[in-house]
Image (cartoon, rainbow, N blue to C red):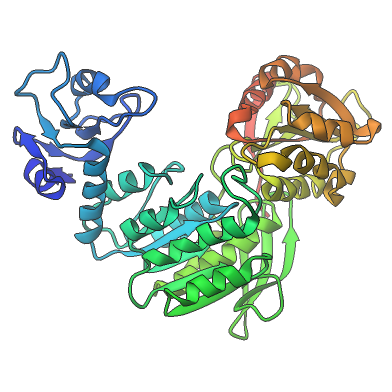
Length: 480
């Protein structure tokens, strides 16, 4: 498949092409590069120019560079531009301009990646759909996602994130969505913002990139809903609200959380909509409302989307549920793992703890007579000066009262550990490596275990240790 010819890429970026190459993909990482990719030599922790020779050896069609790297022949297939990131942005903008795809952009303090993946699942059944496999939502991830978009794409889903003020609007203007979603606004990245209102202002700036006649979809339950609505009204032809509160356009009126799925009933324009999401969690059902609202706004078939929504499962590290067998000789000796180790802030932590609180451990099959609800929680990062108080407040959540043991990882989680009743305190450790080494001694057959924390807390190491402890293997939960 031809994604970019040398001439097309040169015209898009204003660069100079060496050779008559044709690229079938775009890559920024030699570890995942596929033969035929255009390798983009971005400068981050390392300078991508140092890896150009390796990329070409691995079969890259060409490399986007700002100079001919050392060890690379001057006649090697290259696209030479003044600035690599600017050229990648131009490539993304050109890809967006040459397609007639209907585009939806998603942001939010919580749920943007799962919402993006839900949208990809339900739109893929209705046309050629493009979305990033991973959480590529920053200043290089958005143009990379766009640059990878085939010209014949019919639906595109673009995730947009931020760490600092002023990041979302330029990325939205690059994506030029027809529909834009704010999943929620919650305390996250407070190091860079003075208040949650500031976070709402930044999230709402996604509407600045809407195409004429566009639709804004906003969470009507959040305390900053008025900010979202006001900004949306200034940029969108139509503003659609969703959530659980009375008077919203898409309102969740009933949720039943089962072992491996969530069944929900909603009301939209006076019509009842029954749907299922293929994982437990009421918060997933709320995000699904935004998905269905976006499907309608994009002109796709809602009934088909409802059917396909039941096939969606969260990506690894974002709330996946697995049964781990502790003994290959006895399939009854299992633990249930909820892997949510990729991201955390107070809102997402509360949602995940609520999922854990609603689970049903198995009694009488392990060394301990009763199965336990166990939380292994890593630091929530980038919360600013109130970070210790925000960690301690997790002890007051109703869901926390239903847990048996809470293990805490990291210096910030010490605040939660100290706030917990002594009967719920498990272990506190400075690093995830320490707890991972102890994992086998912390679990027993029948337990349900949630592992959650910001990516930087590295609690994914505990997930890996749990899976190693599961000598019998793993199996996915059966759906209702």
